[in-house]
Amino acid sequence: MPARAAGQSDAVSRQSEASLNASVEVPVAAAHALSQGAKFSVTGVVASAQGVAVTMSAAGAGASFVVMLSAKAAKDLGLAVGASVVVSVIAAGWLISDAAGHAICFVPDAAARALIHSARVGA
Image (tube, rainbow, N blue to C red):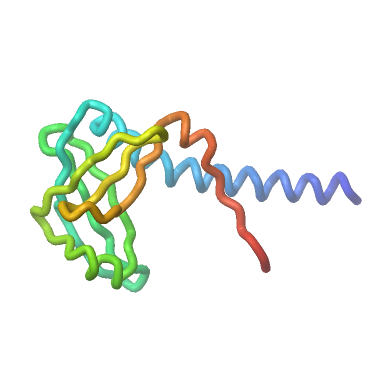
């Protein structure tokens, strides 16, 4: 019986890892553009039932990524199409902020991505 439980646990772990890999692979092109010093701006803001999708694109680099924010966070940040964002290099990647210095998101570099994992806590 324990071997069967381990097999199920491994399958769930592989599914979780695959899901996480998909979600962290999205910003790889953006991370490359970030490492090249590209300038990013907000190119789309779309509200949905899950929150507000804010698309950020690098001019001339062909890279973009979407950040999901709560409606309150989007409102508080006042992000609008055309707004510039500030990119700060930190030890584990890049911190994307609005012009006022409010953090919008963190984009991990390759070393930090290897350390990120997802786990459900509680029932």
